[in-house]
Image (tube, rainbow, N blue to C red):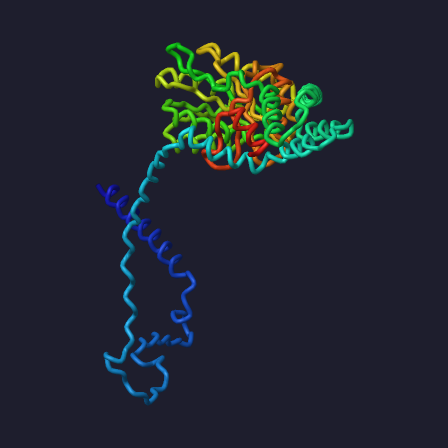
Length: 404
C-alpha cells in the first residue's frame, strides 16, 4: 500500500514539473514593446470618427433656388413601337399586248422613214433618160451598199435591164411598179412567214431562240411572248441563258407583264437542264407554246456551239422542236451572214428575226440572209418598245423601201 501511494506522489511531481517547463517556455516569447519590462508605454489614440462638415469647403454666400427654379432631367422618350413589316410587293399588273394588226400599221410608217433611201435611190437612177453602163453600175452599187448581196444584185439588175428595154418609155409610176414587182420576187413572197405554234399534238409547240450576244435575243423572246399572248396563246418561258446574270431576271420581267410563267435555274447552271424543265412545265400546264431563250453563243467558240446542239437534243426528248429562230442584228450587215452560216450548221434554223431594222438603211439584208440560209425572215424589230416586234410582211416592207 505504501508503495502505491509513493508511486502516485512521484507521478504528481513529474506532471507538475512538466507543466512548469511548458509554461516557462511560453513566457520566454518576445512580448510587444508595451509589455516588455522597463519599456516606455506607447499610447495609440484611436482615429477620431469623421464628423459632418469636416471636409466641406468654407461656406459661400449664395442664394438658394426654389424647387420651381431647378431644372429637372428631361424624361426619356418612350421606346418606339416595333416597325411594322413592309407589305409584300404587289404582283405586277398583267398587260394586254397590242394586236398584230395594229402593230403593222404603225410599224409600216416607221419602216418607211428609215428604209426608203434605197428605193428612192433606185427610182432616181431608173428615171434617167439614158440608162448607160455607168447608170447600171450605180444601180448595182446602190443595191450592194444596202447589203442585198452580190448574186441577188446581179439577178435584179439583169431583170431590170430586160424589162426597161421592153417597156421603152418610162413614167415614174411605171418605174415604181416595175421595181416593186422585182423586189417582191427577190424577197420571195410565197415563203411561209408565220411562227409555227401549231403542231397538232398534245404537247405544246416548242420554239428555241438562238443568236450571238448583243443582237437583242432575250428581249426578242420576251416581245415574242407578247405577240403570242395577243394572239390568244398561253406561253411558258424557259430562261436557259445562264451565263448572263441579268438574262433570267430580264426574261421573267417580260413574262410577268403578260402573265407568262418563267422557268429558270441557278446562275451558271446547265442550260439543257433548264430547257428540259421548261418543256416539262409546259406539258404539265397544258400551255400552247414554250419559248426557250438560249445563251448568246459566240460563233467562234466551238464548245459553246456544241452545247447549243445539246440543248436541242435534250428538248427533243420530251417534245418535237417546232421552230428555231435565229436573231440577227440588221445593222451588222454581211457579218450577220457569217453568224447565220455557223448557227445553221449546229441547229436547223427555220426562221429569222431581224432586230434594229429601224436603225439602218441597209434593208437589203432581208434578201441576203434569206438567200444564204434558204429560210424566211419571220419577224422584224423596229424599236425598243414592248410591242415593236411584228411579223414580217414582204409587201409592206417593199412599199416602205420604195415609198409612195
